[in-house]
Image (cartoon, rainbow over all chains, first blue to last red; front, side, top):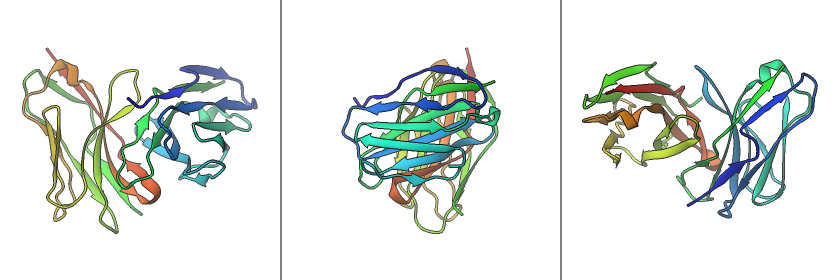
Length: 113
Length: 111
């Protein structure tokens, strides 16, 4: 079974802090994704990566950056956290073949105060 | 751009009732369509998919048919159980294996 592990289940940070959300997958998947989930808005793609050191902006990249130094790890960085970044963050991975399903982690609920 | 529209929830049903959750899409090409389910406290997991028109995806008693003429992919189940209580997301495929998700529909099944 594919396992996608997000390092924290809950995080509370202060406005202006630099925040790192970590995600690790154990199935050698090429593609990795970061989504945020908000009530009434569903899932929105922040960034994705289809190879080590490669990254592409999603629909809402502003205020975020990412890092993928190793194939199994994809980090989401909030350079200066703001209250409007309070959300549930979901990491996912998939194989690099057409219509491969996304495998999700359990999410990190981030609260910025 | 491409998008997915789902019926708003919550949908509240009694056990053994028939379920329909509506999903329609807008797409310029010929996307694949998916239903994902999110149980409380968990991430999303794939429930079923269909990759071309008239395909029917099915899993765990759930079904959905890819209807190109009505641009729809409605989720159905003949007899729901309390354990089906979850949030259901319709999604369509985009380039580079990205997915575009709907807003999700909360299903609550009462015993």
